[in-house]
Image: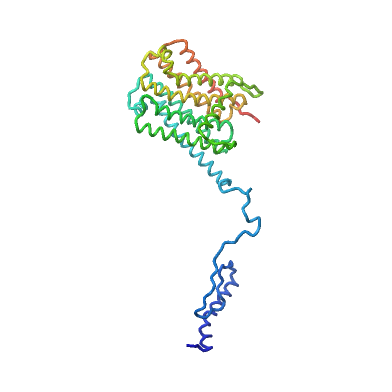
Length: 381
């Protein structure tokens, strides 16, 4: 059926009026260009309009195209600040957990051993547990120093990289000592200790890898090589205008003596005759287990002492990090001295010249660490 011209105009009138109204509104309020424009005049019925896809604008110049020198999203300052915050929070959690565990072991060693191993310890084993608590407190202080360094973006420094390596190998070695011990802790205690120590080691290794400028891998062989390299300067003593001579040599000697204690703890079964000459009470399976765990802790103490020796050579013992590490060394030395004195008083250890030298060494080291904490001056330049 054909329509007349008047009918066609009547049908087109509403569409034309709508298009005119839209055009007036667009002139009054400027709108962004649309990908598909509405026709100003309605098409006859049955006519198909071409469809256009809405596409994003393409780069028309070299300025819009991505350049190789432009930073990626992971390298942006905002992402780096977020990563620093994550590291600091992780170190804060490690500090709280290790510090709480260390305080529990140091304050109530008998109750802590009974809770972890399910056995009532004697005076000898309780003293070893107190020493283990001081090791955990030293590890917590190291983690707190790393937390402050993460907040200030200082983790690329050699000092903090060395502390990260020490925490990594200490956590890994302690887990191995607990699992290979003649008498393991209870199942739930072993699981909690493994998760805590393995998490500490993993976070320390990941942070060391992320803050490394060498671009090498982070395999255990590489980390072991870096750890041994960090201990390679124990025999070197470089004096400068700002060097604290007494602290330099005392910390160096203490680090070597601590490494000797690590060797003795590892080879305690081969040195059983020497141990039996000092001990007047049986060590037992639980005591042998704690000897291995404390031996790994002495390795951490050796790294901290070497770090303080390096700081004494540079005249940096007044910095906040090394003052905190001095507190950790003093706590560990006092715990060892108090434990040995209690053993001698109770008659479980023979009162020999070697024991007296040990007591005097721990007292001297604790006094030096506390003096450096209180009176060491910050470097002016």
